[in-house]
Length: 337
Figure (cartoon, rainbow, N blue to C red):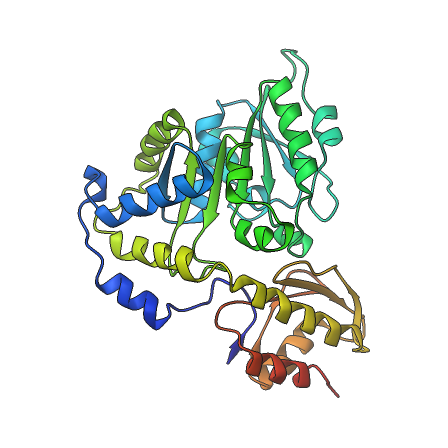
């Protein structure tokens, strides 16, 4: 089967498995796993920040950041389609006791003007605005990439109003592959950043959360309370190191294949609309005459898995295990009776 449901479906490459099997390990709760320590130091140096912490998932990394940056009753500003709100099981309320101010963004990308207009005044009737969260790339915006100048403008609003600034950078390296920015550019602006190793980078497990030393010290306490302390997890961290060393540049191949799929979809009579394609995510809507389940069943009969995100919406995601040969097969399969 050709699996286009997500970039989380990848399997470790032969080189990654070799790195995992040969990794030196120890007890990370004691701070004694040398491979986890090496991964955390590598990511911190890459982004030019003081420290980092390895987490089991992107959701855990984001929720730890929100917990550290807020107090119960505070308010978090984010897009109404943000992963931290839409796909993390109500974690902002459950874990942090915070409320959420949801903004309608341009394909999920909110603006500095919107943030400024929604910072609450010092009023006992209103929650305290304490944190702004962005997502880059924006999953539900079709892998949309933020304009860096807009991020800088939002950062200024945060600084002027004493707000913390967190980036859900699950697919940040996809954004970096198209916008010409560097990891250091982001490390200088955000108070905390999470990056996912198990999406486009192709590792089997894990995300890394980064920030200054005091933030990461507190994050370790929260990770422990969340049950996220791991022992000899260096075998997994080794996959992350390998991914950062070998799978970043190849993200451009995923983007190229996504563009090809998008062009093929444009000519299909059952496609009503397609979101602009910037990275490795393709969102498109079907016409009424082509129900999503019928479309998915037709694809599956041709050996292709896809994902429905709404009554008419379909998502394709290109990734490490999706080759040019598979691309050719999918393009041919899109022609349906």
